[in-house]
Length: 181
Length: 166
Image 1 (cartoon, rainbow over the protein chains, first blue to last red):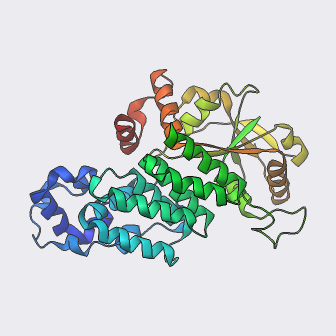
Image 2: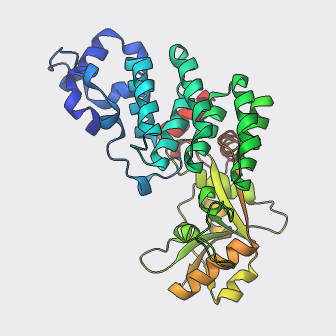
């Protein structure tokens, strides 16, 4: 996270001064003494998916080893909201990011606890259940499991009905059971 | 039975999705789930016939992660090793369940390319690929912590926070 925010020191300063209660663990990226001397210019507006996803090459992404990615995504969604989600939608549908990275990003969309973006995140996850890539469909399904909303059940049932890969179908059925429970 | 951590998507295909694979052959993707160490070893776990130690093994391995996530694995019969000419040896592991490490972790040693390919083919044919969901993994880690098998303070800060929140 420190590397990610290196070019955004003023972002850290601004959010420390204005909305510390909203930051979660991202706030600890820089020592207070360091950030207090930085500019107040709101460069967080420049925060984008490119910097957020930087450093996550396809083959390096292991399950459970994406804490930094999760923190970055959480900050991006909190501060850029619907715009960030719309941009992610384009990135995934245009195959601008690898299926593996898309999968992990979708899982984090489900894990984020932020009411304001809930409906948009739910919609994007449901939409990606129909992705051409099984890895992305899996990520969407896992994201929905993390989101934990029964609203996803009809889309998930539909995805299961159309899923051709037996293993993925079983995984989606497991998610469906969790959402129904 | 032996366990190897895998990515389930690498083991999931049909003839329709891989029309370029000859009958009797399999896609190469599962091979990357059997990456060897620099000294040609592969880490596996011994699972009791009744799978009574399976949850502990999963919890111990998942507890080494930064965050909670699903856990994919393949279980395959031990005699696959004989068929592939592969030898297993007890070996240390960095799983967070120290007792499990001592009892059930194995290294497949002196792996060659031909042994590796044979092993992957046999595991594909005789193994069962499964998934523990993120929610289940969290429950298993909690269970091992409560039983004193995993030290909570040894967990990554994010994982520890996740366990407290969910």
